[in-house]
Length: 199
Image (cartoon, rainbow, N blue to C red; front, side):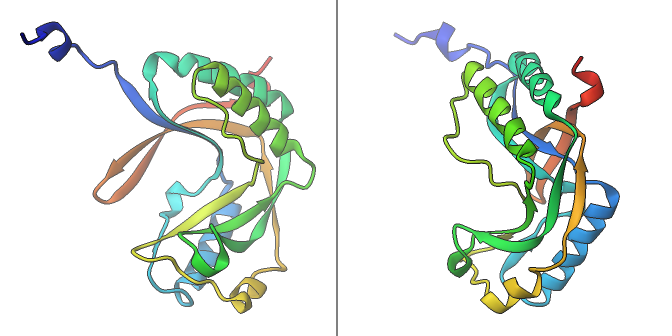
């Protein structure tokens, strides 16, 4: 016997979500200049669109839209640690330089403020039923992904980008919706929380 009630049950609306620090215009242009140079040095990489560049905080994944207010509440708690500074510069790859599937530009958390923000978001996400990530905060800006096979990033290229840094004044946490399309990911801003919106 077919259970028509279960078969025809409506799926609750949901979105693929993550939280991030947006980039200022000068930082975005700086990272784009790094991408352009890397494009001449590395093959087999799909580079991230300039409009999609950000410092990832907490990837949430598929989330029922009804839980979004809870996530905004966690952002308000985390926003109490704003503003903070991140030193943007240097490059690397995950999981390793010799076999990188993700190429990134660093965003060094010199004061520990970013880690405080991440820890609050991670703890509150667990309360919302998403589980803890169980990792230390490793701030970075994803700039490229290997197209087919992992990419090797030679040490001389790493050294080439080691010295210069620009300061990012992170004063807002943004909740983004991610939609995967044939042309790549499209990010839509849902809500931004700054220090002045946490009181």
